[in-house]
Length: 443
Ligand code: UGA
Image 1 (cartoon, protein in one colour):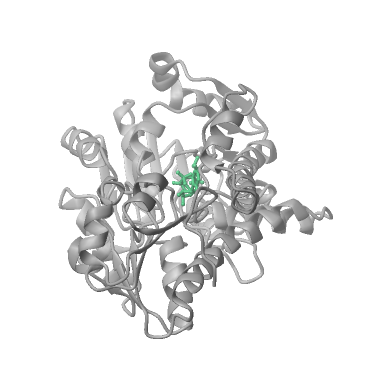
Image 2 (cartoon, rainbow, N blue to C red; image 1 turned 30 degrees about the horizontal axis):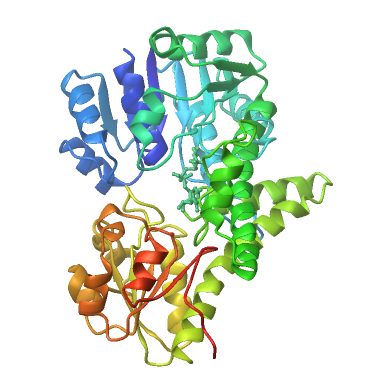
């Protein structure tokens, strides 16, 4: 099939490369000339394991090409995927103006019947809005082609995006148009034949809701275990063992029960808010989601409380944050707990250093007022305390000896529970973690 992908970000670029791998002819379009120039030079503009190889393979075959012009992605295409950003608005809902703009561009550039597929995460009802825009634009421009709307949410994780796309847990698509359903079956035919993943075929609002409900549920699991961690700290229990004990119940499972600084990234924070916002708009107060968000925020405040318990006040105290990316395996800093914490610490007067094995170039561009330090020992040297924010292997591997040899005071707040509390405390570290054994603080 001839496929257009509009938006060459984490979802769009990885999806475009996967479509090309499955035998389709794909044009990926992005309005940012710098990104397209980088892609045309043969490199990805962001770090994602395995993506470079997939791009090398699919571009060499000519199955995947790039353009700055929406017309190149739409003209001649049988299906166009909308993969543009839906950034949060101040009121909690997502900004859907980019999605709408793609709807209009598709009508303007279509050269035949096509299916417009939402892949960006959007609230239920967006499909209906798109149909309305397309209908109006077709009438205004007297376009004869049939343009059907479908929803095909993406469930890839950053850092594991290529594997998640090539071997998904499921494929979900929704549309009320039979021809559009056939087009989507054809898009995923090779994947389903080779990988055998389950397919959920449904209508547009149900597909849209599956995405928001999935992300909100995963975020709820994380906030749930973080709330349990708060109770564990107060009764002397160990949240990691509580989670392990819970996870053996097959109905619960082990994944996404890792207590810590909470969730960040471009998806969970935005999607929890957007889902609560949508529910409110349609007359349901989904208060549980407000609580999920509040627990997530309070996990970062809890670190400040632990630091203050050790250091009295934080004015002019040097605090090293270990890890800046919102999780390991990515250089993405969007809604990263470390970045949030860095700003909060600076508000209370601390001098903050950030170390990250991958994300510092991004930090320099996106958070130029925060100080990144490229060498781990240099970042630790002379600091009054270290806080583990991202569980990179290199950070997991820091020994008590290394902390003792570098920090001014041996204070470590382990926001991702990567170290062994007994080993740290026995070695003389003033060690605090989230919901597990920590040193006593008597002041
Ligand atoms: C998430 C979902 O996992 C994907 O299925 C979805 O497609 C994607 O959002 C999206 O909507 O595009 P992602 O944001 O890449 O993927 O990252 P996750 O691996 O889900 O982690 C999100 C955050 O939760 C990270 O900050 C991570 O550190 C945190 N987390 C995760 C925890 O604090 N505890 C856990 O047990 C798991």
